[in-house]
Each structure stands twice: as structure tokens, then as C-alpha cells.
Length: 388
Image 1 (cartoon, helix red, strand yellow):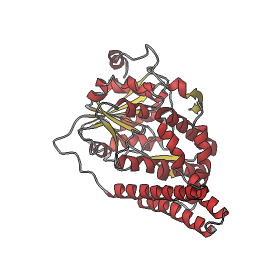
Image 2: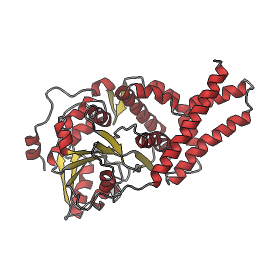
Image 3: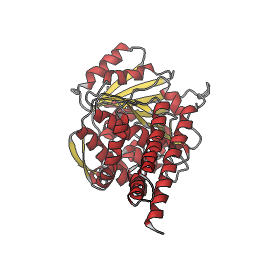
Image 4: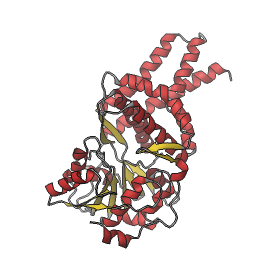
């Protein structure tokens, strides 16, 4: 098989899969899950770890109090009493006296994952039959709980959300939208639709008895990221992760290129460490390789350069169609953001094979995040007694 045939085949297959993933997600977004039956109203605990003041933090945390689920408990978690987010949380709790809401303060180390160390006390302080661990920077829709429970089936182990970046206020933030929305988010939603399911850490909804039977929330410290651990801990159980029908909005505001790049490198290294062979295939999921194939055919004189332009038009036209139908952020600069993303993706993929990264200003390594800290599992009784 000659190199020209390989280039033609790769370009054709990649374009077909790319457009196919767009079609799958467009169909998914147009469907509506039935609401949970009126007889099914379990108590749900919403556990939200907070750390510092993020963009629109008050709006994001206030959305916890606007949820329509009638049997809801809200538990905010923070590690230090002097964290600036504490004042926001206490103000919101005071403004909603009818809500079953409280703040728990403290740090219980179950591993090297700082988010999980913040969350663990909230799990043990909560009392719901279902527990939702939700990032503080997510803007929760009113039907947030219903959207997750509507995806619950007999074989569901954990329900989660893909992330949707909204409210970008810089070009770097639009590049982050390009990575998270119509690329990573698209693949996550398409994979869930065809049965290739993974949990995503923006939201993790567990039935308490399920996770407790698997060893409790401390088992999520076995991997570098709690969503990867959630996926793996279900293997062999007959249970599986499922994603909510639509992604969950996260306002991001202004970002710098360095911030976006460091975050993408961190996520790439966590995916590579946690997902193994899946990460290897990721190199073929973007535009770089198929575009290089199309360009090589034009250079060799096999196809005209107009073909390369048409190829790019179909590729990005499909992505633009999905973005418009989903009502995701789409400005005149977004096509440029997609091109920058795709040009950077091969470098990012190679850097994903590294070990060290930065998380909230702290230098860490993938190896340091894998596996629980021996003897560090918290005592549930001490948790409930010492927080308030």
C-alpha cells in the first residue's frame, strides 16, 4: 500500500468519523429524557467543594439554591475558615433560610488529589440517598437533579456531566472553549451515546449505597483524577457511567494563554496516566493528522489545493453547525480558536506523556496523585461530629 493510498484513507476516515460524531451529538441534544416518576423522590445531597474566588462564583453557588428538586440537601466544603469563598457561602446560606444548607470546614487527606480531600468531609456530613459532587464553578440549571436522575437506569453506577465553557471574555478563553466544547465535550457526548462511557469530574452523582459498597469515597483516590477512578472502580461490577443529555455550563471569563495551556497539559497527563490505550488513539481525534494527509496529497499533485480548502470547510463547517445548534459560544474569532487548538494539539499530545504539572500554583506529578495515602482514610464519625 503506497503512502498516497494511506493518506487518502486516513483523511477520508477521519473526516467521516468527525462529521459522524457531530451528527450523533446534534441528535442527542435534540432529544429529551423523561422526567423521573413522581413516586421517585429520593433525598439528594449536593456537595460542592469551594476554594477561592472564581469567575462569577456567587452566581454559580447561588444556583444551588434555585434547583427544583424538592428533597435536596446542600453541603458546601472548604478547607480553611479564612478562605475568601467562605464569606460568599455564608451570605448565600443566610439569604436562603428555608434551604437545608450548611458549610463544613476542614481537610481530611485520603490521597494527593486536593479536590477529593476537600470533598470527603462533605460526603460523610451529607445524608442523601444520592450524593452529587459538583464543582463550584458550574452554573447549575434549575432541573440539574432531574437531568441526572433521568439518566439513571438499573445498570447505572455514576452519572456525570460534560463541561460547557461559556462567557469567554478573552481570546485565550475562546481557545479553552474550543478545546472543551466542540472537541473534548463532543467526543465525550458522542462516546456516551454509542456506549463508550466515561465519568467526567464536573459532576459525579453516586447512589450512596453503591459507592459505600465499593469502599466509600476514599476509593476515588486510587487514580490521579476522581472521574477516572469513578470509571475504573465500576469495571467488573456490571455498572457503568452515564452522562447527562446536555453539558453543564461553566462561566470562565478572561483567561491567559499560559493558564489555558497549563490546564490542558495537566488534563492531558491525567488522561494519559488514567486511560492508557485510549489516550494513544486521541492523536487521531483532531484535525492535525487528516489535514496533514490532505495537504500532502496536494503537495504531491494528486489533488488540487482547492480540495484541501473544501476539506477544511466541511470539517470546520460541521463543528460550527454543532456549536450553533447547541447555542454554545460562537463568535467571529471562534474559527481561529479552533485552528489554534488543532495546531497545538499534536504538541499537547506529546507533552501528555510527561509526568509533572501545575495544579492551583502547586507543582505536582501524576505519580504522586496515584493511589491513596496509607493510613489516611477519615473516620466518618469524626467527620460528622467535628464539622459545622
